[in-house]
Image (cartoon, rainbow, N blue to C red):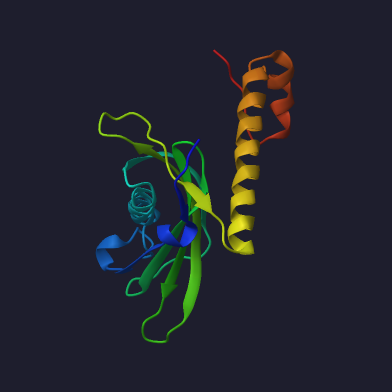
Length: 182
């Protein structure tokens, strides 16, 4: 059993970066792939700071792009550990953009990354337990527990489904597709 515990606040990481024209997509907004790269960096930093080990991304569980980010805005990402398992952590990340001329701040993205702590040989390493110090932290932890249960249920349903059955193929007629099997 783990005897080391750390507070959620000990995992807090904040990064800010000015969005440049080189970060844009074809519509002139900041490219989602660039934001994903920054998200992965802050998730790594947060998980490594908390665990004291090198960490790898196991899954990107949620990425909700809520508002576009403009060139010239200051993007700030705030990350913290929301959940810990034996060697895994779920990192919650909030992304805000600020128009530095007007001071307007927008919540642009919320993301959840599952990170795994590794030892020097590359094997999974135990992470400290999590000390929850307020109701918001308890709520975030409980939300992660629910998300893990839903993920396991989806995997189970996928394992018992018969996607190639005639019944399933015929049920696809309600969608905007044509099935032309060869």
